[in-house]
Length: 174
Image 1 (cartoon, one colour):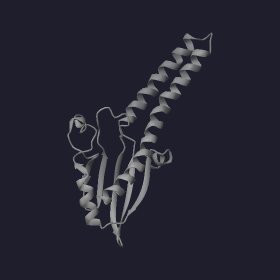
Image 2 (cartoon, helix red, strand yellow):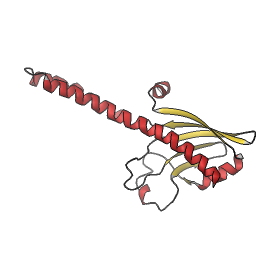
Image 3 (spheres, helix red, strand yellow):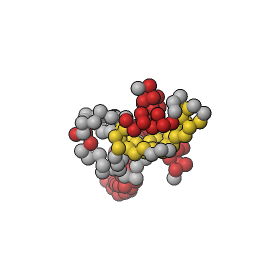
Image 4 (spheres, helix red, strand yellow):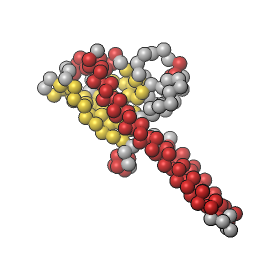
């Protein structure tokens, strides 16, 4: 499943190299990330928070799990989670990050969509036996219902990977 998600670009691996000491990087990183759970139900009232940090998650000495904090009226709500490890290599910190946009909550959505169309397409074929236009519309609609969430998540993974690289670079400059 993991390989499949990588192939369809819902998981992206990236490596970031920063010219900073590991301990100094960790202190900058912790200062810019709010400590807390990044689970599915942990963000219900997150938009009411007064924190100025853009990310929320957990950081240890060698690894991290973060996601972007939800904000009011933010249409680009990033649901992608970033996990990774960092290590000292000479005088640089090397960060191996994995951006994951796939959530297990998408599985019931796709199961529901599939069951709906398994029931609806035969009814449409029987009900509109004299015309093919409604059947074509139903197939087009089914294609859109499968593809739109995929393309949204793929775009969010790509944007999160770019944003996390920028954010980590600028964290070292402050």
